[in-house]
Length: 69
Image 1 (cartoon, rainbow, N blue to C red):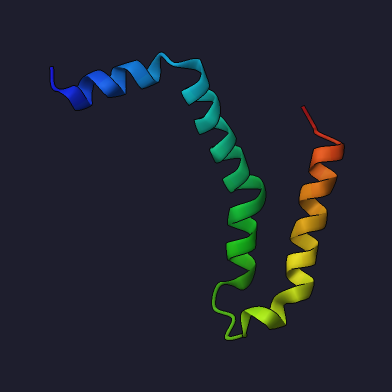
Image 2: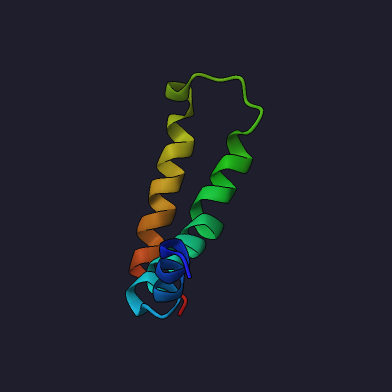
């Protein structure tokens, strides 16, 4: 068994690592993917997207105050 295989096996049995992977997946689904879908193909300056960024910030703050789980 190689070191990479040993590290992977250890990671799959490590609760903090699995928790971090789950959080990254949830963040991607709740924040990153919708955001990227919104801006994909837009030919705008990043500064022109200020209102969208404020919506993302408000969504994240709302999610922190009222978690659904």
